[in-house]
Image 1: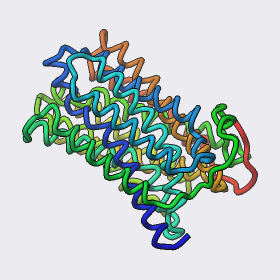
Image 2 (image 1 turned 90 degrees about the vertical axis):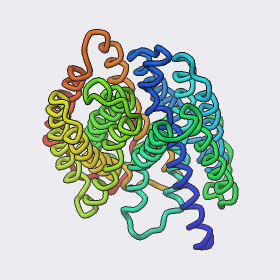
Image 3 (image 1 turned 135 degrees about the vertical axis):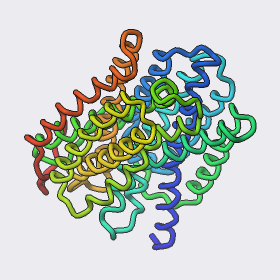
Length: 397
């Protein structure tokens, strides 16, 4: 494969990965508007995130390895199709159903993207620098969600046609990415066995099975907090920080996500275990800071601490991804990435569902305290049990 075609495929895959998550974030800044104008309850807002995570997990468990057999391009185009379908549903939100159903289809899209499109990124990434591919894979959700949320929040607050314009732009972006994918070279040859690939199978590269529980714990703690921001970011801005500005709601949501890319980059010279330990310590202290600033109702302080928490999340997630990706063969990347993201989405879905049920009894500050307890527990587990990966045989879990 020519170098130029590989570079084009890398750009196309990366942009498509970001676009899938941007589509997922587009409705989030409007959540408080739907809450106030259409009567969508806090529990229903939590359910939008739960169904999103459920859709992602289903896609990863059932279709996570399909691109190894059908090829990366057909699945990447399917991702764009699911994202477009859900975006069209958001054009007419009068109650919670379009939000819940649309987010479910977005979960399917992002779940497929997390396996097939991330594998496409890994296939086409340049060999140097070695950290580039893991960093993009680890932080694609953060970047894409930030792009979608900030664009949507700005257009809703300052642009015309606030309930629709952001979705039209998302549809245009998905169309462009589909064209780029269509003109990219396929990196995974089609082969028989697609039906058998639908049987859930979780493959890990390391014989040391102690790596996975530690990585899984870090995924749960960090992604659960991200799920909290997805479900309640606009409500935090309105109820705890005293602003109804949708761009500020998007900023609250994005302040946690975008700095994850910085956290990944600054840990390039650390080993996976070092990154996990230091990242979780920083993340835990940042979550404590979130609790304090939320209690004080300090907007700037909350945004700053959110950024620190996001950077720490990026670091620890990258360290955990690196630990599990050592020694993975090209044809097994999609399966391993399915394990990683299925764990992450499940870790976000369950706490978000519990938080939604508790929202009838606890306020947002009290819910945030629960996430703080989770962070402390996982931090202690990471400090005790994190270890470096070994370069040897694979294992199945």
